[in-house]
Image: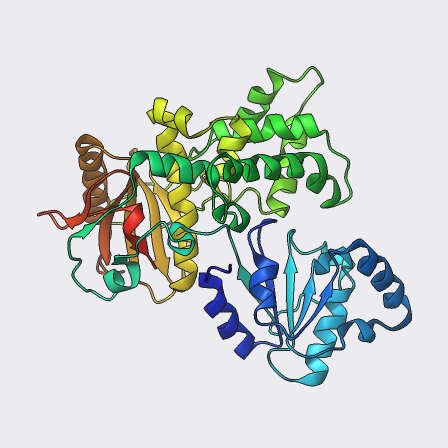
Length: 422
């Protein structure tokens, strides 16, 4: 059973304006299934036999691979990098939109492997594992679009318990897992980590890497989730369990490979216009594409999170980042974090292309933590120079625990993640 994705409508829109659209994102996040719903024909390069035959055909007549009803889906196109230029050339020749949909689980090949970047001809769409609204766990009673449009938020009931949140974080937003129940659903993230370490990272760029070292790095990344740490921190963490020599260049190479596979997706810093002279810290915050990658890398499950609320809070923040990134795409926006040299932080800033933005603090639950989040939001809002940029559209504390979504007397919104939608 197909669950509607936010990317469905985005793909239709992008195809209407481009000759081809490239859908990027981590393996197993549903790219091919979503693309196939729009496609009228398909070349499946994920099939080893089709790939072998297609490589031979590229040497004889590359245009034959692109023939078929349009939009034509080219799945795992990056396995034949030279196809990129053939597609770009065909888009130019036909001069029509909606010709091709490309899907891939790794970034574009090096510039030396292609002639043209595809700028102006090939649009891009990033897909991620499913948000709670897409998987049906969030009731969607609080709309981010409505908040940006200035509509008042009514008190809405949250149906998800803290145990539900722990389970959903460990299950992740993998479409295959969403359709399963119990322990079987939790196995999908474990299988994903095994696949990345043992197979995918070896084929992303042809460089042989140690699977055990990949696992040590992924565990270290999970331990430092939602933090702004250096490669040196990962090196020191890995060295405690690595008998071989290890330098920061090696760590950087492994991290780059995981980024190419869209396993890692760090959060950039937001740089607003401020009244004060506070210096904005520009380091990225470390995150996985899905919280379940962190829990699987650490070998922990839902009950472990409930028993360790500090770790649970960081994993919950990773879940919130995943969902808000998906929602930001639908709102023509992008997600950032904020931190300055005075120690003031804001977990997330959803900044839209039209200049509007919302400030969001993430707290697992508890009145004290919510109060801390609200205080930080108000302090940052007071620092922003509103003669040079608008006031924030809203201040929100996004929670895991809480019976209702509500607006506090000071105007700060308290919204359980189980109520949110774009």
